[in-house]
Length: 256
Image (cartoon, rainbow, N blue to C red; front, side, top):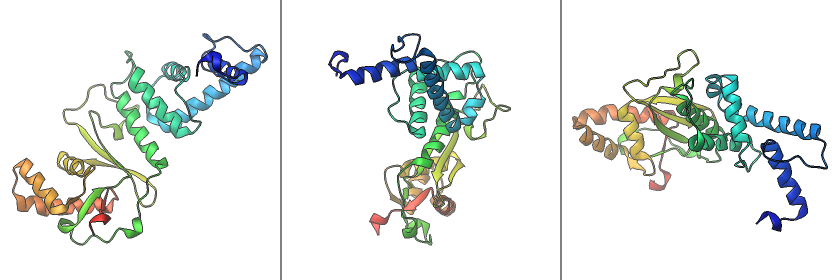
């Protein structure tokens, strides 16, 4: 709907929001005292900044106060927030970073990866996906069990070991080997992070969007690695058991 076609009260609402987002580009409203408008702006900006800081605590600590304010003020000035929920605001900020972030000299090279990792953990806590944990059986024979990736598991590969990043050990050059992680919300509603080696990461990748029987899965990995099949089956069965015990993998109930 065009600005001219809006009802009068919606025009006032839009003008109010425009001023709150960016008072340097939007005129104040005649019917609201300027000091009150600025108070509203400080309150809404501070709330937005706090939501993001709570979702991305390490990301926040890696930035100076001036850099943090510059990023969050720029984000706040853009009309991209359509929900007052904290997880939605933090998610919109991640989208803002992906689309608008321009690195500055003092920004750690790991900054965007840290933000993505922390957002993944934060979003998992609010994810509405469900697993019927009571229907998950005790795992007796991993090789003959059909596995699927839990809908509450998120595997990722990063250049930096983001799960270990702090202000003290922040790195500006990535290590030679990538970092493979899977974040998952378990049956106790606790979000955990598990570091993976390249083989386990490949196993989880093969299960993303497609359930497979353990033996079939491990034989494919053995073929890809050109390794002894019996050895991979033996070691892989233990790997499957560990991932299942951590609620990263679940059994595919549709196959039973």
